[in-house]
View 1 (spheres, helix red, strand yellow):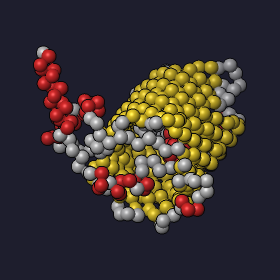
View 2: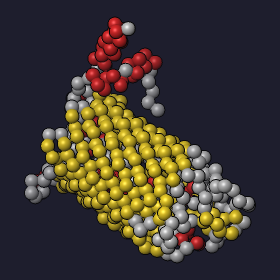
View 3: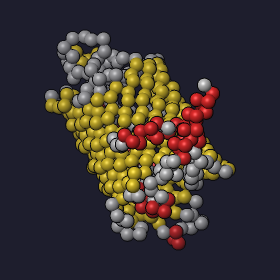
View 4: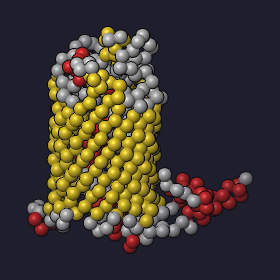
Length: 367
Length: 72
């Protein structure tokens, strides 16, 4: 938490009026940029690979447009699949469009995203407003998005909907000449068919379709600190608390460091720990029938550790063709270790655990 | 009532104008370095967040407003 001394409270309470009244340094328009990513996930019997590309182009003074294309090619033999269904392959494709408008110290971004799978379609509309205040010392963001999702099954005519509203509030604050803090809060309201239509719960070992509540309200609050240690090294750390109306509480801790090896090479190291309690209607094996019953391992009590490393090659300007301002390649790797406290691998009778390998190869250029 | 509103408005504006940045622009060299960026490789950060979010119950309070499932 950012500590606010008592003598500062009245001034902090004046922030909303300051947003309108103050004329300070201008917000910076996003640069023209292209990004390309190839990603790969392999763990727990699931392989997901695919490309992603992003491009941003300035249209006029302070106005830019962006487009993104993202593909997940999925081959799944996860524990849910091998214990209650057949292995399958599918593809998820996502298209996103956005427009950013910078005016004075304000930035407004509107976006639309469409995601499509054989049995799941999602349309999301979003708005994000950011305002810089106090000479660029503080940046306040407010976001809203609305999602319309359609859930289906590929083997019958089942079809249902999900409405999703997300409200976000963020503050980025310069604390000292070498330290930045961000605080983000997000509330998510979901209504509709929130379970997986293929997954089963167990009553005394017998499988029955899962039953979830049709509403869920979630809240997440995150604090992040960035510290410049010296000219070559920065450190970062974050903590997030999450809670929802299904009885889940989760904590996420992450620390990391970035270090210039020389003028061209940069390395990032990170460690992330996530832990959560089970939903109130989760059981590995119910002893009788209840109104709501889930056996989704993502709703159980579990934790996972993630160790990450990235290496970036910043290509010097004199080596770049076509008048490019800068370009860089990044290779990233994450090793994830999942451990479940109350989700049994029914093939072995032991608590389930698995490890995953996640790769990213990334290129970006500004022009 | 009108005078009260005017007075309050002036007090509010006075409060704003007296807030001085305590880190001046010429002191922000370290903050401007790419290693102090909140997201230096946005597409990787977005992808990692998606990998995490579909394998846990908690969603990340990131101000990113993406959609879709990909939750297999």
